[in-house]
Amino acid sequence: MFGPRPGRTIPGGRILGALDQNLEILNQLLERFKNTGILNRIGGADHDGAGGTFQSRSPVDKSLICQVARGDGRDIDAAARAAAGAFPAWRDMPAKERRAILLRVAEGIEARAEEIALCECWDTGQAWRFMSKAALRGAENFRYFADQVSGARDGQHLPSPTLMNVTTRAPIGPVGVITPWNTPFMLSTWKIAPALAAGCTVVHKPAELSPLTARLLVEIAEAAGLPPGVLNTVNGFGEEAGRALCEHPAIRAIAFVGESKTGSMIVQQGAPTLKRNHLELGGKNPVVVFEDADLERALDAVIFMIYSINGERCTSSSRLLVQDSIRADFEARLVERVNAIKVGHPLDPATEIGPLIAREHFDKVTGYFEIARQDGAEIAAGGQAAPGDGYYVQPTLFTGATNDMRIAQEEIFGPVLTSIPFATEDEALAIANDSPYGLTGYVWTNDLTRALRFTERLEAGMIWVNSENVRHLPTPFGGVKSSGIGRDGGDWSFEFYMEQKHIGFATGQHKISKLGALD
Ligand code: NAD
Image (cartoon, rainbow, N blue to C red; front, side, top):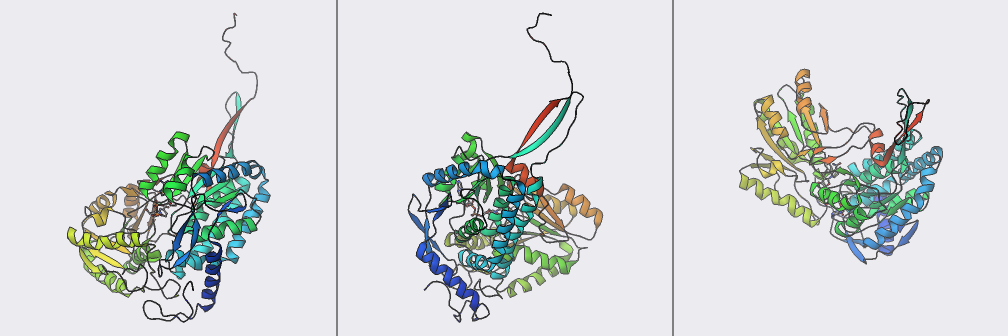
């Protein structure tokens, strides 16, 4: 039998019970996936993968979930052709109709949010308390961009003495969306919703480690009335299906979320066909706590931003920069709280950290425990695997670190925080900026002018002052340096998925140079 049964003992010794109903739904879903596997969805029809199948396993107990179609260049070609065929009608659909379909997708997600969250937990190891919200965030993404459809093509009126210059925007064409395994459903909607709202058609290549909810999304979208071929899903590995998507000449742009080194490959692979790329990549984000901050709130935010979502989040505050004068007390309170974080089965509502996504990632994260020791940092909390059948690790805190250590420079992407002391504001800024990454920064201070000075010079695409990361969809999301190129959110998304077009209308008989004329 697949999946946990109600009443089964879970890591940490508690018994599932409150989620009996959810577990029943999960088991029904898993039965279905077990029977049918996950097929590619191309042009509104199911297709086997040209490359055969691969196995999807749950990080919760390593059990087989189902077989998944292994797409390669042939499947990508079929999907790109389907997306190209569906493009003219989708592009030309009146905004009102397109908006209505996208709103129905949002409603469909809301109606199946529980199923989505359950699958996400089982597929990725993320805790229910976060995935239930992430599923609804997926609906919000569709709802928000549905409401932007009517203005997506709007342009500007830029008159000059002889011309009435106007601009307009048109969808770029079929686009590829390549997504990672951390909160895969929410991240997919983040890309797919604005692409569809802009009038583009999409070929989606979900992460091979988390294929379940991409399947649910395309089902929901088609049930909501999305025409066949407008959204196509091709499963498979990055080097096969992902690469082929980047290389396909019919695909006009690639929206990519994943590691920085993969981002670099995306650019190289797309170069011969001059792909437009939007890259949302890794981070090693600083949270800077000054002595004058509201330390209670800062502590809550520091903990939330690295230990929620298993620490597998690009915006996590994985470097704590804490001022010398408050360091000892702040770290002591941190240790107490970190040791109390509940690691357990992701479907247990009490669980705060579930298992990491896969063996390879578990090995990478736990490998940093030894690296920290070798570099001379102290392991103040955690530093070991946690009990359980899956890839469980203890939430971990490194103290006494310096910013040149690997634990301060490299993205660990797990529930692991590196604490680095500083004395002055200038030193904090230098440490914060001494990173190949520049996605987010978090600053805790009650000194307004310091906050203004500091945020001005901090190298990051997004900064929050006296706050954890609170996403507001109209604001720009994205990073600088190795954290990415381009922005999502609001109109910035349309800048990527659409082409600007300029048209100049002569307003009179302005002088045109007469080359070759005799007089
Ligand atoms: P990854 O780069 O290994 O994989 C991401 C996707 O790229 C997968 O679908 C994979 O199959 C595909 N891929 C791999 N090689 C490819 C290739 N050569 N061509 C085309 N596609 C290829 O990333 P991951 O390990 O799945 O995800 C974790 C990473 O994602 C972390 O670095 C994290 O910081 C980053 N991330 C960034 C953001 C952001 O908004 N900046 C958000 C979430 C995650």
